[in-house]
Image (cartoon, rainbow, N blue to C red; front, side):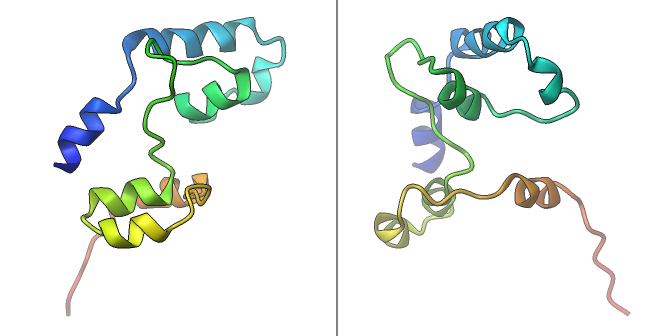
Length: 101
């Protein structure tokens, strides 16, 4: 169910193209150099929308993560403005070796 929802709310290839165009049109794009940029964040910054007129799923939103892991009741009472910080996503991408002595 969570995977089906994520496919329904995913972004189109045109949405990604709009993000690239917005970055290419930005005279201060060099300030974003070397960073990982989320298309949802770029859409909020530059004001573009997807083909259906909306925005795709925000993977940094806490409610999205809660729903994905099956905590629908908790997600329903969690404010939608709560977002996972970029540094939190960065550290979550590491693969820590677990060692038991």
